[in-house]
Image (cartoon, rainbow, N blue to C red; front, side):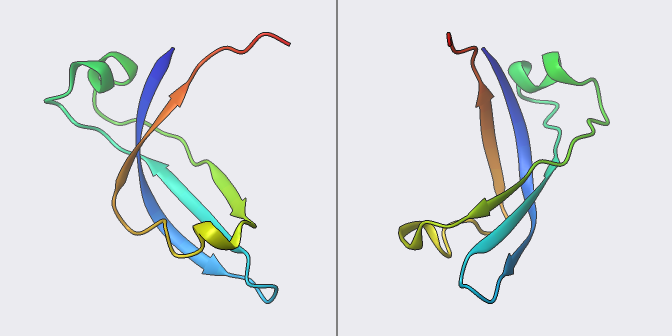
Length: 73
């Protein structure tokens, strides 16, 4: 398992009410888990389309952890 720190760069509302959430990698020198991922200038830009009405408006310009964990098929 690897834990990453990202911040929401922007949220775009689509015509069908779905939202596109774009994140950018962040860095926190006080967090040892984050330091193990990147020394100072991480790069990465995940993007996701939110199509669940219960999640509309949930992603705001703030920091989020994203955890990647291997899954067996």
